[in-house]
Figure 1 (cartoon, rainbow, N blue to C red):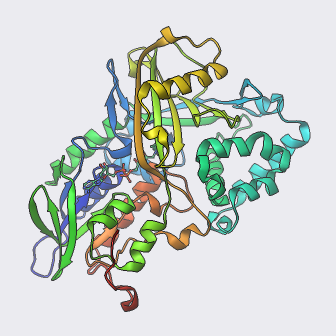
Figure 2 (spheres, rainbow, N blue to C red):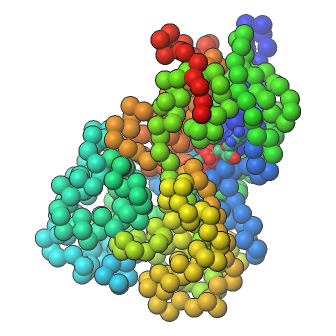
Figure 3 (cartoon, helix red, strand yellow):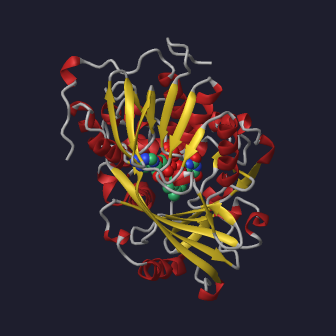
Length: 457
Ligand SMILES: Cc1cc2nc3c(=O)[nH]c(=O)nc-3n(C[C@H](O)[C@H](O)[C@H](O)COP(=O)(O)OP(=O)(O)OC[C@H]3O[C@@H](n4cnc5c(N)ncnc54)[C@H](O)[C@@H]3O)c2cc1C
């Protein structure tokens, strides 16, 4: 058990009940700390939360697990859920030149018509080269657009990478560094079979992330942790060796606080942050997401992910979840996500569900010409403004440190992912680092010159 000098256990508060917050709570309790977690929403889970789709529950946004997700698989094991993991060989589709191709094996790649033999050879060589780079930080000095053209050639850029980048990053594509695209390529290739078929194998936990969160809640409460929902923390301040939180009209004191919330909301509720740190928090650009989810009576394609190499398609890709998970999970229905990553100021966030669907439907028909309205049993639209931090040039220099400069206050959020894309494996790793930081005898000794209190706009 972690004891303070007065022999009392260390009291830790956590802001946010997503995967990072709950994982931190779980490992802190195992280390002997006392934990209270505050979640602003009525339901735990954050971006990885679950949703009642009518006939079944599944993740509100699509999630898959990779065979290379070490820390996440360790958490699943620590929760006793390894027996509920399922692995599926999945296929990738590619929509190019108004035609849907399979890109799931070496043979598919050879048959892919939109690229000539020389372009294919250059593409394969480029991917091999990217996979050999071990530290993506070396690519942070170059823009993704320039790097892709240099490594894969102009034709491959025009035909594939340019449109893909536009789909993935929208207007932010001119800001992203090559590290972003490198992380995407290497993460996907890390889950490919090492055999000659090179087939992708992806996983999920039966019941989806709802199973993981339910087990986390059970474990945290079982170890004496306290979980409070509908509890947005309104202010964080530190004085006299403790951190005070204002939440639900109360002022509560803790030895340590781990904040897993996005940067700007943290800056807004923590007046004591120093100017240098606030500058770092505000320097990170986020992409948001607008995601249409269809519950269908039929399968659309054999692909888990269909990439779209057409700049004018208004969504980022087609994710047919039921080509990864069994339809037993969805009571025989087919579950399809049409995500659009876009900047938080995009008018799409203000558009009504039907207006968004009218735009998306037209382009879905281009990819799946025999799609019919009567195939749709239910349709949902989800919107989140702070989702994907954009790895801009020299991103590691602006990443906010865990130790925030406010005594006892630790930051553990998605902006701290370096060398990977946004994913739960990276967040479990960050949560474990935050736990280690919280257990240190003292947290936050920062340079005097950087310590002037900040003004938060
Ligand atoms: C479309 C989509 C697809 C994805 N696909 C995958 C995938 O295939 N594989 C994968 O591994 N990952 C995937 N991810 C990423 C994954 O969902 C994230 O990595 C993860 O959810 C981030 O968790 P987090 O706990 O760090 O943050 P969040 O989930 O954002 O949690 C932060 C929590 O803090 C709460 N909060 C905010 N302000 C306050 C406050 N003042 N007081 C108290 N609480 C507050 C919020 O309500 C929220 O619940 C995907 C994400 C999206 C959006």
